[in-house]
Image (cartoon, rainbow, N blue to C red; front, side):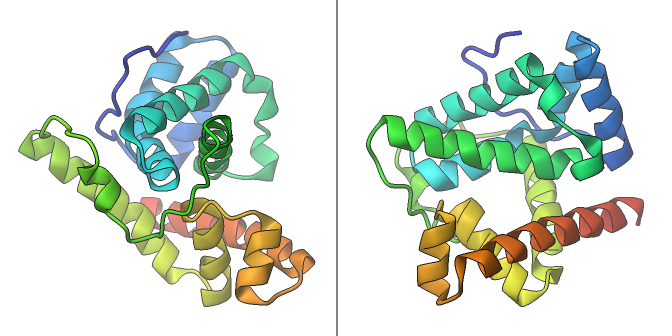
Length: 200
């Protein structure tokens, strides 16, 4: 399955139960399942990669890496360990950091820095696409805002600033073991919040 020259698509429905079905379809080698998962989550994957890399072209490559790995290594996802969206976000961060290391750059994009969107020209999205993208970002952002503050702080450092566990520990003046625990519990809490929002 190839995504060359792909651009992030507008998000589709937000049904978490459907995500499980799509991941199962990918494991059964159903290309349509991958396409539907791409339509649903490519925007948030691209946005996360762009925050880390600050380069639209590199972010697009990292996004492609994510969906190719979802297809070629479908057996790596274990639904017992968390919701698909949490797995996809974790994979996105990892692939963005991989791209950054390949280029010898250090990803340090702050959470609310929007300057990367201005670094290279992008085709202006149509109003409907913009509205749908804003809705999807708001969906994730609202869940993050409801997290326990100590978990949210660690998740933001990890996902949006691209910091390692050791770097987070130094920044927040906490033991590395505590950082790992907060990250794990934060992802679990985020998964539960996303499910509640979806059901609501």
